[in-house]
Length: 164
Image (tube, rainbow, N blue to C red; front, side, top):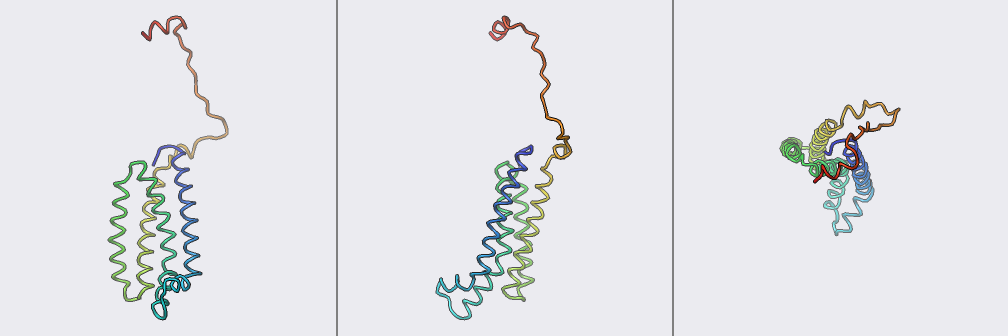
């Protein structure tokens, strides 16, 4: 992530936007799951199972949106190797959890992918917190920061002569 307060600010803004969009998707799928399935021509048990899946998928989408958005900030700053490790471990955990929770049916699979994504989000949040500069948080903001100017000892006439 870029150094300084600008990178932290971008990360916060990205998380706010992604979280808002993910929450919108969650609420939309929660409310309109059956209608979405009907719009695609599903009927009966297939429509019911699809609606359950769409409703269970919502929490995962919120986490996924935040992970992908903050991951993009890290990718842009060149910190992709750590992000690749987090993603790889997350996929392995997701597969293991899905296998173990498959006995619970569709809600178990959705819970497995949501738990896996929650772990990935916790890992990237830890990575994000490490990029915050502690000295910036502890800095005294009561006085404006000014640069100390040093007088130039070279007379104005000699500046051109020294540059050549």
